[in-house]
Image (cartoon, rainbow, N blue to C red; front, top):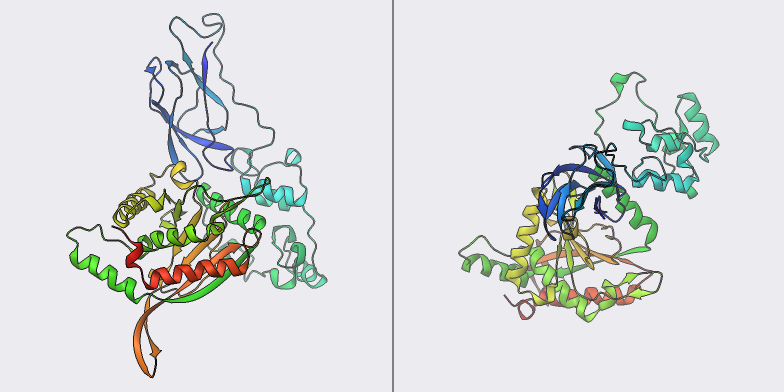
Length: 415
């Protein structure tokens, strides 16, 4: 019996992907592990391998580059020796996509529909190919609003269905109603299209806000010894493979996690699950959006190995070559905004993880040492944690341990 070649699910909320190209031709022999086609998901383009062997059969109705395809759709078959397609020569070959149970819509739009009790089956999509947009949902919602907000909206012919309320339970207040300065199209600025990656990032952020109880702690740390140690690496290194401050922190955070494992636990319906291995994500800025590749089993790596892996992952991220698997499975994330002159901020938990560390700039500042003033390299750490999983005191103790590691880093950093 022919083995179907199907569209896999690449992301946690992926429902459809974009077909990029076949990497095998019709009639090619393939074996387990061979790459058959490329598929673009929400954040990455993946080379899809087969688990089976056979002769690839690509029907005339198979997807073309750029086609959007539902997860689970059958796009081809693997035939065994002597095997042919059922009915071949008597019937026209057809390949059917798995029918959708709901119309096409992004994860963020589906969540919006659920929040407001809107049935997607009765919504006519106004987007490309009938895709349902957030505006389509909002038009079917009668938002609660204050009398002042309704009066202001009425005076300026503003549709309250397009406004996200900032009041309790999403109630629209007067300050939420933005009055345009002009009513002509010329008064509207340039609109930046929302890319699939931007939609995926937005959905991930909303999921974090809705499924966690975030609390942020901040503390200052003397990073003078860390700065001096990195200076030694720079002075003695003959290559460009010099650890960044984030690389140092990846190793030091792994030390602190081993002493406070609940900071890296995960909330599940069955209970709170501690991390089996310390895999740490590092936030990377790219031209298309923020990506978080994961460095695996950090406790088993030396500092130079961490540096080599992070350099590779950052380069792949910025070239758009990261796979979905390289961005999944982390138990903790580090995001560093120090290069932008930021001291402290409130990072958003990268669900399903339970905590994320925000790192601020390192700045030389005067501090008191007894009766004298000396210069020290200080930086601020911002830890956001899920209060459902871990309380404030143990989270603070994790930070205390991390501070001690940063202030005396050498014993914890095998190269």
